[in-house]
Length: 252
Image 1 (cartoon, rainbow, N blue to C red):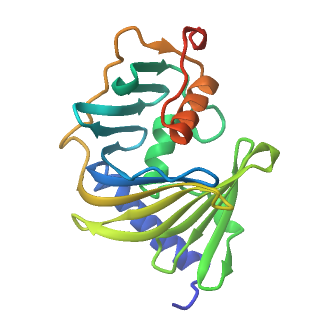
Image 2 (cartoon, rainbow, N blue to C red):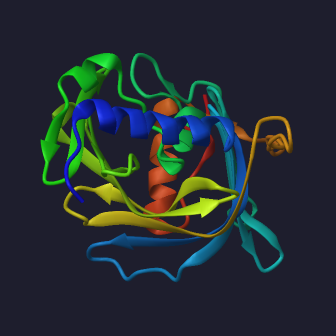
């Protein structure tokens, strides 16, 4: 498709974004997940139930043989992770990045719904690359670059943090659910592709706000309370190794 001027690209992008935020304020469905890490045998893919609620809440449940294997949920700054299969329960009340991406819930919702929103200053510096429109801006100490296809839908989001660490979200496929365009194939990982998670939507229901509010995940009994950093390390270890090592020394 031919490249568009920044004004036309912005109009198409914001129209589609508004549809996801309003008509798709509540979304739930079934997804498939695959994890890959160089040097480690790939684990089998899993099916999960995913709930998203704009602007800052999510819940995901991976089922096991005898019920939920892993559940994670966030609303605002609160994050709960419960892995009954490993007898692990973790709670954090500070799962946010002040001045940056915001809360854990808002990050997950924005990334999985393709709803990162460039500020006005980013659009003023927009440029074209092939047929796409590229906008860049800063969130706290991180640099964000969003590549937008001619249809107004994000194709790629790249984030570079302190220490030149870079990760990318690739929106490889979009699909209309309930007449709302939604990411149906998303790949998240480092730019080199050494570590990545692939999420493919099998089914999704899209609704305006207030139709089916997200059910909160109750903190499990005797859950450990962790800092934001400890919570991130736990999730990373869970993704890498399958069974994180959690002890009472993690709590504070």
